[in-house]
Structure formats: C-alpha cells, structure tokens
Image (cartoon, rainbow, N blue to C red):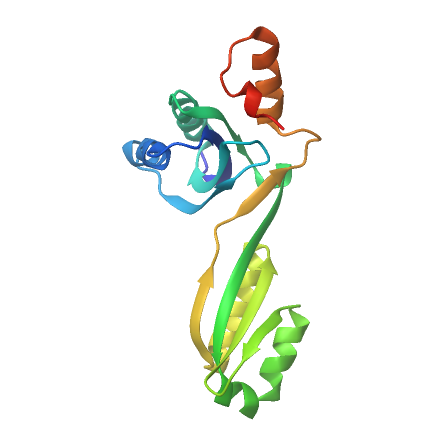
Length: 187
C-alpha cells in the first residue's frame, strides 16, 4: 500500500502524560510524526492534538484505534487534506543588510503575502501563514538570496470541513446515554 500524509485530530482530557501516551503509539508502530500541535479546544477542559504522519490507511486506522483506547483520550479521528481546512505559520529572520541591498527580496515577501513583523539594524523578521508548500517555497527563495538567518515553522493546525466537530457529536451521544464524565465540560 502507498503511504500518504494523514492528519489525526485527537481530543483528550487536560491531564499530564497524555502526549507521552499518544506519541508512544507512533513509536511502537515505527511511524514518524511529521508535525504536532497541542492546544486547548473549543470544549472546556479538553485539549486538541493535531498530528501529521506519513502512513498507509490500514496503519493509520490501527494507530487511531490504539490512541482512542487510552483512558484520558476522548476521541480520535484521522483525515486526509481534502477533509480539512489547514494552516501553518512560519517565521523567517533575514539579514537587514542583504534585504536593503536587494529590493527583489522585499518584492518576493510582498508577492507571497508575508508580513514584516520587525525591522532593526541586524535583522528583518517576517511571518507567513498558509499551506506547507507556500511556506517552504518562500523559504527556498529566501535561502537562494543568501539572506536567511533563521527559519521555523509551526505544526499544522486544522479544523474539519464538516459542520460539527466529531468530538462534539461523540460527547453529545455520551451525555444522552449518561456514559461520560466530560459531558459537563461541553460549552
């Protein structure tokens, strides 16, 4: 089977150690995590993990099921890019001298809709939000100019294209059945 990039959205209670449990599932299956972002979700006391990994569908199904069995995990699902709205953010630190000496660098920044955050005598800080491809494209262009001092990219953040988050449906069902202890946390 062919590997493709999958995004897992995992919702868990806000307790210590969950991240370690989740990453251990990937380690046991020898699947490398490409990006990881953890933040509070729209549900009180529930955190959202956005994880990307190259895998086969069979393997990602097994990983998702194993993660969902963890006691503090509320819900886990995997998605392809077509099923999500996706964004990343990148920061670029550029040499001020090189930016000032070559006006084409400023034009490239504007053409890519990147935002200049700060200019000082040493560096120019630039931010770009978008898809991975757009972010890496700007990186390679700036690198060719020889002006790049530092570069970093966030993990992916994503929301589903469906009307409701699957964890909300799950929690609603748990509340109807009287099975959950997190139902009082839904906003």
